[in-house]
Length: 151
Image 1 (tube, rainbow, N blue to C red):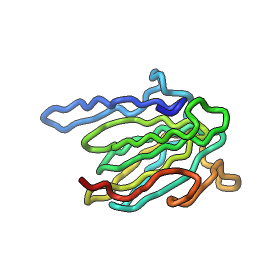
Image 2 (image 1 turned 135 degrees about the vertical axis):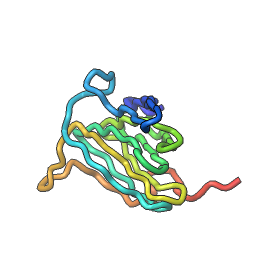
Image 3 (image 1 turned 45 degrees about the vertical axis):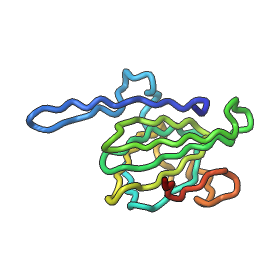
């Protein structure tokens, strides 16, 4: 696991009325502070990546559909520099992935429906000065192939 990344298995509580699952609570070990909450859609087969933040910690889950979330540690001072983590999250695997500053991440919609990703970052988005560094999904800087793995 990449240094500083935390994964929380989300508990689903279901009854005859439906279900709920708690994502992030202020009394969780992962909780740092509240910046904002936003929802992002990822169409099936589409890759959104790569990007990282210098100040912000992300807290991602997928609330509908399935997605592959990939993290890459390019931090020079990290004991896990060069490591890549891959998570399949969503309807069949409820997880909260906490991504620390400096860890690049991307997401790909898998399956046949749009995935809805929810993020609760520690900082609000600054439209005038975004806290982001970006690479294209097929960058040479990260050793990862987003293609479908068959077999």
